[in-house]
Length: 252
Ligand SMILES: *Cc1c(COP(=O)(O)O)cnc(C)c1O
Image (cartoon, rainbow, N blue to C red; front, side, top):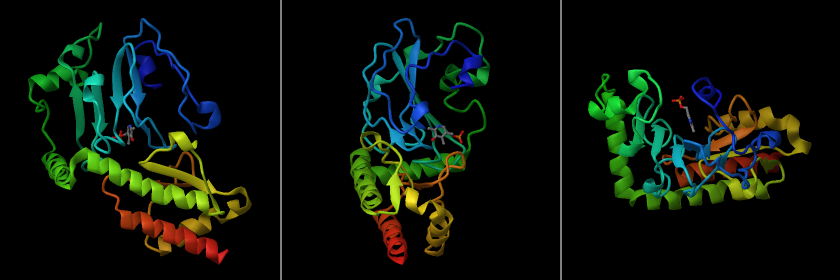
C-alpha cells in the first residue's frame, strides 16, 4: 500500500488498523472516479480473509497470494488476480497473474518494461528466464489439486482444517483467537495466550517444537501464534496441533 503511494493517488477505503487488523471493515464505498479497487483476499499476517468475490462498481484487482486455489473463485469478477506461488501452489520463485486483456495498457504514463504485464503476455511469460523448477512444482501441484477434486475439494478441506483448529482455540482456556469470528481466515489461524497465561507463550512454543511442530510462532511483526493451513496442510497436522494444545493445557 505505502509502496503504491509513490506511483499515484491512493485512497484507503477502509481499515481496521485501530483494532490491530482483527476484522474486515464492512461499511465502505469506492470513490466513483477510482481506476480500480485493490484488495488482498487473505491477510496472511493477521489472519482475516475475504472468502467471497466482491461486487464493486470499478475494476477489481486482487492479491491472492495466500489463498489462491483454496476455494472456487469467480474469476470473471476480477480484472486482475496475482499471487506469489509460494504459499498455496509451489515454491518461491514464480508468480501467477490472471489478467483481462482489456485491463492491460491503462497506465497513463511510462512504466518499466518488466512491470508492464503486456510484456509478459506478448512474450508468453518468457521475457526473463523462467524458473523451471518452481513452474514444474506448480504444475505437479495443479495436477494434485485436480486429482483431489479441484478447488471445491480444497475448499472443503480448508473448512475442515479450520474447524479443527479454531474449535480447539475456542474450547481451550489457555488460548484466544485474535480475528473476529466472522472474518477468520481459513488459511492463517492466529491466536495468542489468554491474559492469565501470557507468560507461558515461550513455553508453549518450545513445547510445540518438542512435539515436532515448527513454525507455530506468529509473524515477527505480531507475535503470538499462527497455524498456517495452506492446501498442503493435512487434517492429521491440524489434529497434531490440537493434541499438543490439549496436552499443554493438561500440564498447567
Ligand atoms: C506472502 C505474501 C506476499 C509476499 O510475497 P513475497 O513473494 O514474499 O514478496 C504478498 N502478499 C500476500 C497476501 C502474501 O501472503
